[in-house]
Length: 344
Image (cartoon, rainbow, N blue to C red; front, side, top):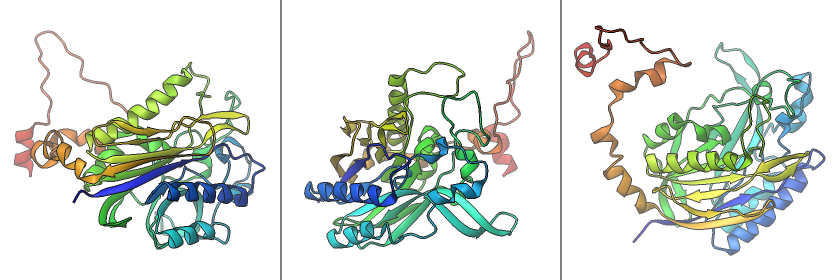
């Protein structure tokens, strides 16, 4: 019997600064019901699904931003989502701003803020948590920007890595599932870490503006969509996994977001795509057995990966200028596979 899971992306139209969490949850519950009626077994919601994308709004003091963060999950406001999952047997992911009282890397207990996503099963239980690692934007108010992008101000870099969990979902007793948030999708390292854990389904929430507001140069809106899809399709293909990527869309607080939520198969093909700027459910049947083709041929990691050649990926952050060739002096790098073996 094929291992088929019916997945859905619940794209949200805009949430304005004045919209309450109750408004957001009621809209999400309506999407939940529509997805369930269409046979979904797992529903993916966007990044920061409970509020507007507040990093576009500057607050001088961080405590002034506390209004946008959740201190517990489920909370009284979000509990209806967990109840809906338990009543229907349909799992879901939820992206939100998390505030936690935790020790930091110096063992100091303090208030910490993360851009977080959780995976909830059909019994209403949290089975996986992920905190966004690749934070874009900036930390201080930038007068040159048409809109602020203050993720580096409001969030810390996630400290949970890229975990994968094997858990029951729908009618399947075990699926290897992992998560990303927004900008993570543009970093192939993130996909590969999930792929190296045998991930079969990646769930991704995002909020991406239609315009690049840095003022550095022009990036056409259609390329914003293309780059988003390109990243997801390449990541799914190169790691032989399904991916569900769910966005917010439309004009939020005066700024347009790209939407274009998609579901992608392990061949990198788009199985379903949102076509509106509003609340919308897209759905697809994912035959998880299809991951085997890629991971037993082109992307058979056991046979083909060469970690000795990838040291720069983990040893280096910024780009380093290459060796400059001069006539009569052929370049010979210090690191070779043989040398690496001898060192080991």
